[in-house]
Image (cartoon, rainbow, N blue to C red; front, top):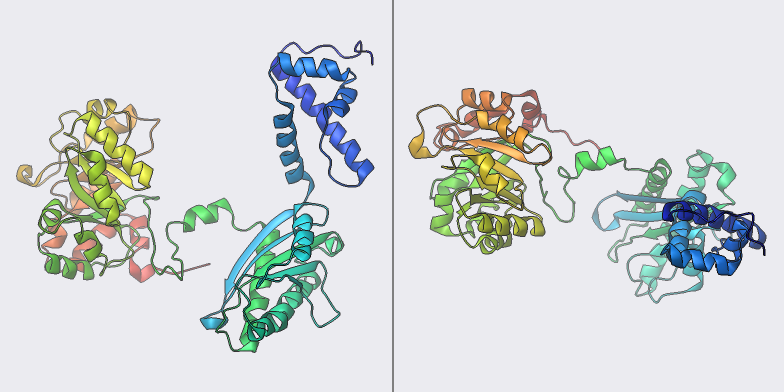
Length: 479
């Protein structure tokens, strides 16, 4: 074949563009010819480029391009763009009859169709796939493959799956088409794979049907709507509680926060204080240094007995062996741990690295650090939280160092971190700190030594509208 019609590319980038465009054209041509997906080949791509195969080999070598990598990347991008591949999930009901449905819906000649055929052809003991049917001899469209999640061990288990669950899924699919949740013009082009949970101790066939129908229909709606949106995920991910796990795992994702410093070295008294704190997503509980020194880090888990859903920060004020102390706090389920800013940079780097490796927050307390900005610039690892702190023995009634908030923001514009302020905080100084850009206000004795702990906490939660919204009186769960 003559190469005179194709000019040799001058750069690697130009060659990659030519190669990808030619490979796409070959895929389209071969797919139409074969009636199914096809991968590009060296010979076919060379033909599209109007060069000899040997010439293409020489260009690949010269520009250091791996044709297999190009093919794999192209195949993935074409699969995403060409074939419908939607995912849905829903949990509905209660008790042993609760229904949990995971499903895939997509084109017969795409990945979902391939999985559908493979599932139907390859049986697994205890998890035999079956077609959903409204009644014997009447499947819905799109055709739906039902796969039991729980191992079917006996005829009683099988009857629940091959009876109410099978009928429920089929009816939900049929109704979804009639209600135009699923486009009617796609019923012969798409298939559905529906994974269904039926508890071995479920007894009520009516409830099994009822819950599985609702779960399947909801999962279909969600799949077609591409639920959830990223905004939904980001909003709920740190507020949600998994029903089986039974507790929330909070994260610091939308300041401001009120951090209550539990410094009284008396476990039972501390528990009584926690019991009086109103529920709010804006509250952090600090396990203070005196409390940890008396009881050890195990006190964190002991406090969770009365506050299992709250964000706990362990104030270890680490000065040495940074990794070891992070591990101690982590093993007792702390969500964050505090090191002293006076620690050597090597200690702080190890401390911050270990915290981030384990997925908890690293806080550095700048108590008695003359220049927080200078100190932070010596670190290879940057903390999640910087605490501007005046010690109890230095307090005179008002906080100092609030001007450092803006200094930190200006010096580390490229970093994502929270700024906390501590030291004699009262509602007036808390308001000032928040107005100057603080993310966390740390309060100790004003709350813990108050005769009315709940009232004292609410004084701080009332400072900003966003904090006020999360007081327990206004908590509403909305799906």
